[in-house]
Image: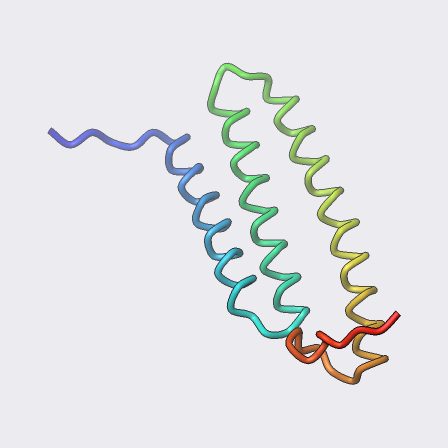
Length: 106
């Protein structure tokens, strides 16, 4: 009658939920910091999916953990770079609203 969901399916759904929330935040947020947080949510959802797939399938758990560690390292570097760019934009234009930064000059 009613089949239960496997743990892998539940983890993948939570990862998909995090990715969807991040995409929603990226589209609807007006500030640059809010957009960075939304991107981080999306990356965390992908990391959760990688770890869940590695732990709950016959695949190597160590490779899944290493893959997620790599994703987290890339996310940390990306967040540092983007926050530095946001800081420069706020200092130069006195705003962190994305719509008001469309007139960037070289």
